[in-house]
Image (cartoon, rainbow, N blue to C red; front, side):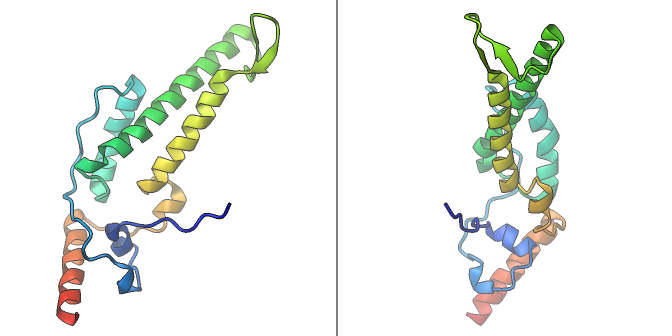
Length: 165
């Protein structure tokens, strides 16, 4: 299955200095940069990640109040990944082996379920990280100035488009 390129927000297109101005949606809703409240349902590791990552996203101008669910999804996946990895490590210490495989109570050998949880959590984390520009490759497409400068660039572009039709 072939996937097309992901749609980018207008802010990202401006930050990336999009050359084709007709690709910039001047009618996209403008939402102020703001850090949403951390959801209470997140696990401990997820809450720690929320506290770590939100100031970074705010400085980059890439977070608003309506991004709460996406950011919570990333943080919860991060929390589950940490939890699964800690459980894998406990099994390694207890059993003295790599903990990739475990024995069931009936004596069958199976893949450790924590391996599956860790792998799935990493996949989810990656998808959210790309959306927020948090991977090395996704960052290469973003040129960040201060939030005020980014907003000024957007306003200048908007005004220019309105004057030139």
